[in-house]
Length: 211
Image 1 (cartoon, rainbow, N blue to C red):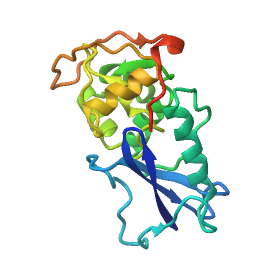
Image 2 (image 1 turned 180 degrees about the horizontal axis):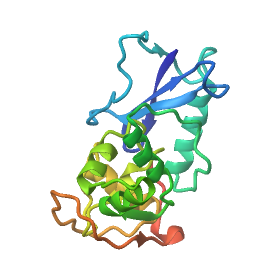
Image 3 (image 1 turned 135 degrees about the vertical axis):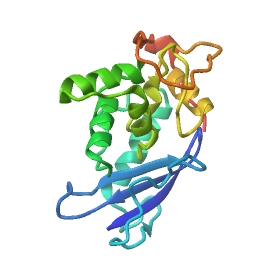
């Protein structure tokens, strides 16, 4: 069963969606998190064989525990703190998308990686050719924004391209985490393959976002 709630973040309202079931952890798993107006905001959620989500509020008796855990995780994140281990996640996607999303979860806080670098990792893991463009498509379809940190993926030249929630949110999230972000972001319409890994300096480079 699906459950839907809203969360008021400093970067705008977010929708959080959880799923419960015998095949999932006790308390459910997060399957969706997106900002209002975000592209692909219901990716992987709309299915003919599943009832519409039950709308719940914070503290409701029928609210799955994973939604409360997600709110607490986001509160720490937006306060500029290391939020720690994420809540249980169960995003829906193709095998390739799942592989890319797993790579996103492995990017440390305060660090960015290029689309091409992730493509190289996937290629080495599978032994099959993988393009930066294909990785960009999977990153753009990430259904769990912020928690699955697709905002940490940048263009080959460090440009902040391809974030479904918008470049401004991507910039603010990266700065919040202490990543090095250029004052101006060069255009990079096609993600490239060669890029440095940028590492920020968390204590002074990150600041809480106010509600």
